[in-house]
Image (cartoon, rainbow, N blue to C red; front, side, top):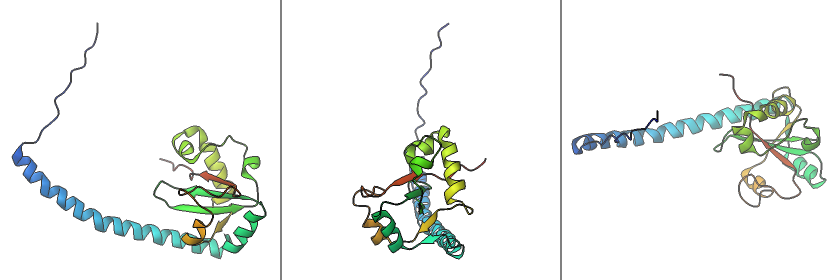
Amino acid sequence: MISVKRREKPIQLGPVWSVLFFPLLLVAGALSIPYALIAGAMATRRERRFTNLMKVNGRTMDWADFIREISNGHGTLIVEQFSFKGPTRMWWTTENLYEACPYPLADWFTMTKDASFDAVRQWCHARYTSAAGDALLVLGTREQWRTIRPGAPLTFRDDVRYLEVPPPRRSP
């Protein structure tokens, strides 16, 4: 027996419901502005606290030291990007991650979507970007970062070895 799917008719609001629904949309839009401001301020505060914790633990690197290292061709920049909107943390390690990593590597988007790259995410976090990791958080202003990112965001000069990696997945 062949199954035939019926096409359901979309729900349409009448003119009265449309008029009532429009003010709700305006209220929701107005409420989204303070929500976005508060959420942004909380994220900034969380990142500032994290940076201060890394400073206290001796896990930061000065911009001048970072530039000297990349100019000499040493180490790898780890770009830990939590989402498209951020936050993004820049870590530096003296190791060449492309040689040290025991797992296959891919771009950030692929690692984010494909669960087969979870081992890379865990390994990188445990070894470099966790509280017990070895990598140093690079401290630089936006203007300083723009000096090594000539094109689109998160593209770097040819002399910068970098790896973009998402943080480990959270347990449900």
